Image (cartoon, rainbow, N blue to C red):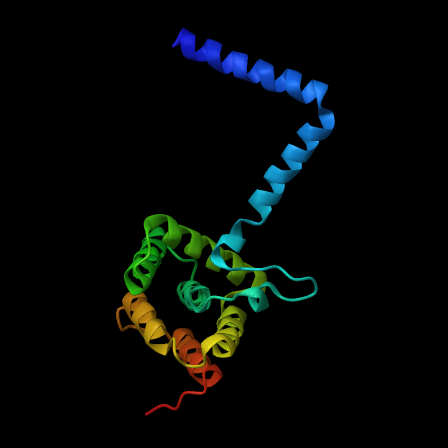
Length: 174
């Protein structure tokens, strides 16, 4: 244990002296680290544009569908940890994602729902964006995701939101 502490102290000292002797490089490295953290959602094909709502930067239909799923579990009450875990599991099942990809997709969809100002506006905005991306091709994914989340029991607000999705995707009931 003392050897590990000594090694960490030596590394910390070297970093301190390097930053002290090269302040511009140290600031540049720190700025790069902040930029990487700020742009983490880009890993999932999200691009940020000025004066455009973040949902309009979504380029992957999976993100829009996951956003609809996140909004569905938020429609009635605050989602429980079990509901969030079920959403994560359903995204893994529907798209055969790894654990890390499912976690990133869930955190990004949660952030996007928050950016919309609530679950109800997020459903309609995500559905409109989804229609622009691939028309009604993702409807089966939405049905599988929502079906797995709600297990066939929809509340009134969830039924209304599902109808909004159908309308946004230009689907006929029947």
